[in-house]
Length: 423
Image 1 (cartoon, one colour):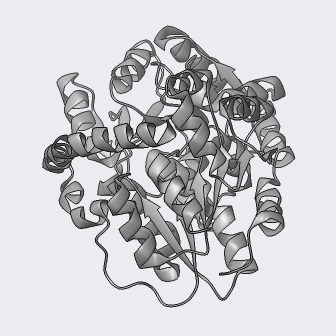
Image 2 (tube, rainbow, N blue to C red):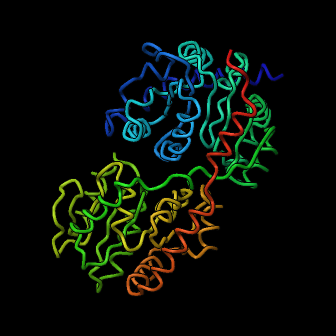
């Protein structure tokens, strides 16, 4: 019966290939990088990097950034190995290049077609692989198991919504999870849901994102940004905003007509910078671009954060940070980085992708929930006018981030205990 499930699944994926190619072409109109390296998505690669390989799959920006402490630990523990990163999105690939440069190799993970997966594994022959967060690909896991390649799901999370989705394909999900060598879950809730779906050898290791520390250079860049923004002017930021959310943030801004506060608006995806610039212009809001690197004029109300790799610096330059992806039902974005810098955090009601971290941050006094733009405006104004509250939340954020570190060491220990000897 399970063979029929795999056959039906693979047939369905083959039927989707024309749609996948059309998707790459259409996305390429806004982001040309989607039209590059298309062969890699079907298992066609250049020469294999020399030496033993450890493979990490990080879909996009968030997973790639979260992998930083793990990458450092793997380089320390396995100095004779080369790290291979696979990504799904161009922004993830670009983030990997910014963070790690030539220290790692990077390609796209192929679509989960049996022959494409076989080509990938034939080419690179990794000693073991790490899948970041929630990446369950039946043919990939099956092929790795056949070759006795240890495969781990690390920093694993499974929301109730995702668990219901995977539960609709219970047989295939169970078989995929049981092909994994082990699972390192973020929380007990994640572990319970994964176990219920069929995973074995699940260990709660914590969230790797707590181990990501601000780069030392980000504080200096933050000082430069704050000088450009104006040292005497209150600054609040909206970080990692998603489509449809910038309009709500600007609604909040318009509730604050009497304040001189500057909004730094940082969209999550770089391909949307121009779209957000158009939105600002259509609303008649005076704005400047971060990329212009100019001092902010008194009449400017918004700085559009159209740069990559500077999120920590933006946090250093802000008095208050709202974390995007949370005013609409998009699951939220990572609030841990803002807490680790020591900036007070505001976050919307939709945080199912970061439910545990958000709950803990609120309990610690590092974050406050805002249900809508009106409350967002009110909380920003309250905090900007109350230095003592800001300092209290900042200190709570630093403690919160520090107290939950250690996931990296636990993942490394799990790998050492469970991976087979090199073939």
